[in-house]
Length: 497
Image 1 (cartoon, rainbow, N blue to C red):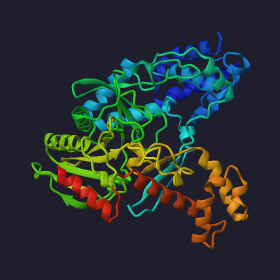
Image 2 (image 1 turned 90 degrees about the horizontal axis):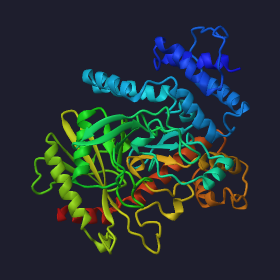
Image 3 (image 1 turned 45 degrees about the horizontal axis):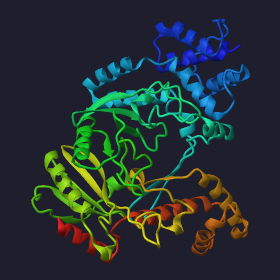
Image 4 (image 1 turned 45 degrees about the vertical axis):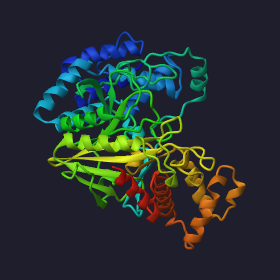
């Protein structure tokens, strides 16, 4: 019988404020039904005042559900089912929205604080998995960079992969960013979102959704998405939406991935932004050179000291900044400088921008990161994409989060770096190891650079060296290099404005 874990789960709901005391019986009955039980001994467990350990209780219920044949015992089915268990403790969307709106009327930060806590307490953001992510910072010529190895996305189990292949393809919801995910039970090839809640907001006079990312790459990592399933686009409307959002939530920044493959994010099919309450390395980077944009002398404008090519605009009048951003975007879209390998269009458009907006007291600030997705025979994955020599660490697209100075590195690196450290300390031949062979050139350079490499300093050294690789990856993604020639070419574009 699942009496004790059911009572503990409901107590967790009351302890965290997900559930009012008056709904204890109602929630207990919902969980009973999910567990295929029709009665419970209410005295089987008495709260002792200690916080209930949610992962422990859910695991107990999931084990029992698997034993009873309610679910298949695999990570995919367990995740679908525990979302349903948590939903039994949650208020309906309209109630959540009312609480958020009431808090917002007092203070926007109070509203987001409450909603962020709810998104974690509901296990939509799985705190126990996020805690497994590895995070560190490393010095670079551009200031401290932030790095993370993302371990919170569960690895698909073989059974679920096989089931997903044979599953009937569904177009509902159209993608994981659609409004239709709220309350969706999920399936083998789509996560369960029964315990998910969305706050509707209006930006640029259109309907959008506000939620947190279940993988929280940084503090209060939120996603703002179009209520309609419509493709990513960078244009005048994009800028208006970003500024509308930071007016609604002045303590958050908001940025958009680019709208072209290679330089965009992983989801180009659904228009969305990402933001949050985090001061990224790029936001801390200083202006390297002041510039004047004709017709916009009233704005503070400059080139940012950053490995990617960034123009920063700042001022009190958001309308003026939007006009200047439009002018820069339009000029960049059609700008070609073959000597710098910038080709605007060869039948396909190549130039776009990654924009990020934030408040600075009474001022507004926008960073416009110039992007170009041209490919060459030498760099078939993209001339301004991580080059092949760094692929052993990072070969994925450089999206918004990386652009701002936070590396989201693949989970494989955790084991590979652990094995690499052992191999280096034991002076093993890396080229004889199929898993580590790809790191051999890099590791040999590290050994040369640090002749006193030992057990007490190897962790720090590997972290620092991964940080340097990340700074090189960002330099590769920069359309104008940070050397003399690159800066000269950057100034040619500034003159074209």
